[in-house]
Structures are given as C-alpha cells and as structure tokens.
Amino acid sequence: MQTALANAGLAPVLAGGLPGSAPPIRRAETRAEPRRSYAADEEIFAEGERTAFFYTVVSGAVRTCKLLSDGRRQIDAFHLPGDIFGVEAGPEHRFNAEAVTETRLAIHRREPRALAGDDGALARAVVAAMMRGLERAQDHMMLLGRKSARERIASFMLALSERLPGQGGAIELPMSRTDMADHLGLTVETVSRTVTQLERDGLIELPPSRRTVVLRHPAALRHLAG
Figure 1 (cartoon, rainbow, N blue to C red):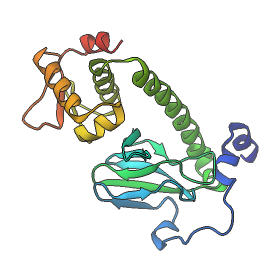
Figure 2: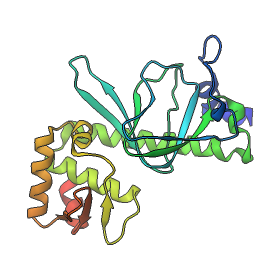
Figure 3: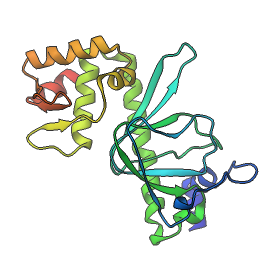
C-alpha cells in the first residue's frame, strides 16, 4: 500500500511537509473517521493553517475561497455531498473553507496510514477526487476566461444538476446569489439579472422558493453554455 500511495503521489501530499508537532486534536477527532457538524458560514479551516486533516462532505455544502488584497472574494469551488476537499500538496491550506449551509463532514488525518484501511478504498476515493477537482478547475478557468454571463450561469446550473439529486430537472441551490457571483466572476446584480432573463426566455423556472431552479430546457442550456 505504501508503494501504491507513493506511485499515486499521495504519500508526500498527505504526509509530507508538516514541520514541528501536530496541532492539538479535539477529542471528537481522535476516533476512526470522526464526524463534525458546522453551522452555515462557519469556518472549517483558514488559509495558511497547517493541513493536519482533510475532509469528506457527508451533507450540506462547503465553499473554498480566497480574499484578494482589495477585499474581494473569489470562490474557488463548491464541495457537495460525497466530495473530498482539503487535500494539499504543501504543508498549509491555500484557501479558506466555510460551510455554505448546515454541513456535516467526515474528518481524515493527513497521513498515509489513514488511507491503508478498508482495502485502500479511501486512497482510491482521494485519487478520484483529485482528478475530478482538476477537471473542474480546468472548466472553471475556461468559464472565467472566455464565457459571457449567460454562458457562465448556464454552465454553472448544468454542472450543479449533474452533482445534486433532483426531480424533474429541479435542483435546490445551497449557495446564495452572492456566492454564485463570487464563483463566476460576476456582480450580484449581473447574476440576478441574468437568472431572471433565463426565466423569461423559458430556459429555467424559479418556483416561490428562490433557491430552487427547474431546468426546463437542458438541451437549450447546453447549447448556450457551449
């Protein structure tokens, strides 16, 4: 297993670069695969903190973000149930992580032996999560660099529909319009105006619960998203 981890690049990622003694560990984090709940907007870890743990989203949603020097916020990604996050190449976290809604996480120690149990199932899950994260980062780079506001929002909603369970094309958005704006590189006003226009065009429907979106014409949205 150690060889397999080294070949996959996980041994140095999960065990290397932790100088000094580990930070104090709360009692709840010493059990095998402990779980912890976070309130909406509660911080999970901060940029610059040592990467003693990584996490799996059990329920809820997490945003990873960075505050720019001028005070603006850029949301790197949203992590939804089943997603793994907090795996870093270096000894410190490069982003802040916050619960978007009430969220429950499974907590894993950042060390190779934490992946050796259960026939390496966690190790395989981490590798798969890293590959998915790379794909999403590439898609996000293309979205920010080349797409219009309508194309960005159409792409975002289609991606969420694939990641969130829904009925009849309906998806429950865990994030606010402000979160969407900070992820898509838009203003809140542009997000609201564009979402309203997509509704007027008949591509989506916004029920009374404004966090719910029904994708009425996914094919048209895919064409719009490019």
